[in-house]
Image 1 (cartoon, helix red, strand yellow):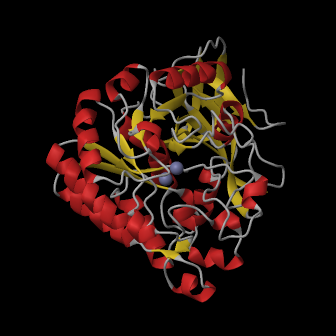
Image 2: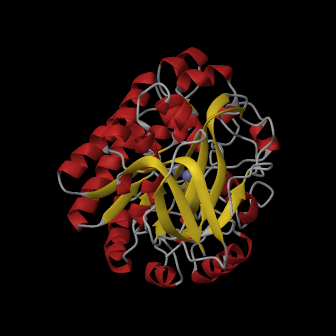
Image 3: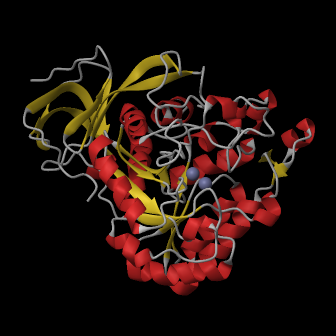
Length: 432
Ligand SMILES: [Zn+2]
Ligand SMILES: [Zn+2]
């Protein structure tokens, strides 16, 4: 549904790369032919470079800041950042200004995306009007107008009764509810993870149970209503336990992990750099270990970046008052490759699988390299080392939590919906 074919009429042969598609059981040196945007041939070849050709990634969690804060990101810059990160499709959150809570706002946004987007964008609509947490949006009408799913992301759905009501509509509208899980009476005015580091710094903490208790509550309601929920940006050990338990009980629940929670801990906050401030916060080394294990086991289904651009002026404030959120589209693959694959925590195949798996909870097709499939391809140079931010960003914002770090692995080209959406400058591959 998202990956409609772009008008693209030529053929392209990619040779010399290692081709990986875990879903198709492919890990071999192959020559791949793309004709008119469709993969038409996969033939034995030989590896002649350090490139890996994989299905392009799907990000189920992006903030495009449009409408309302185009100074931070717009559809063009946000989808350029996505393409540069190897993503062939992204899902945008509705906590914009105005909130995407009515069909006219959604239709206007989808029209803008048709004109400006470099990769397909699916838009979520709000669960409650103005994300105020009380009155439900017209979910059936929004689904008809093209809402991919529903979310009040940025905020939890405080009231259990409101969530139950929304889930009863969810079954009719057939779109999943994506939930930002936080119990406000526990998270309060916290600015970082509650633990040894917050105690040392004297900063107000957000305890892990703020997240896990809401997940347990919402999973119980979803199970009771036989409805589907997707848990956003899981950060804590206790939450993984709650999700495992809910899945074991038969709840229809999926969940995502961010690159920053998988690669960083609250130790980073010792620097008081606001680029390490996000919600949920970076947690302990123990939480991080459990998240990596959950990614490996499949207890958590997929990767979502929670790419959240903020202006320089806002992020240059002291840690306590700076807004929460970091960008992540352009660094997701490289950060995870550097911190999880190279040290041997997960295999490259598993990482690719989890970075494409964000499609399934939203009933989108998972990108594949199977013959006959629309070409959604990421071409990655696994050996390339680069410093994040040294050449700027495609995103309009620079609040990246990996800024200044050296990462290994770089996306050289992205094909989305059959057309080249990104190609690194000065990069050419055996294209015919
Ligand atoms: Zn959120
Ligand atoms: Zn978010």
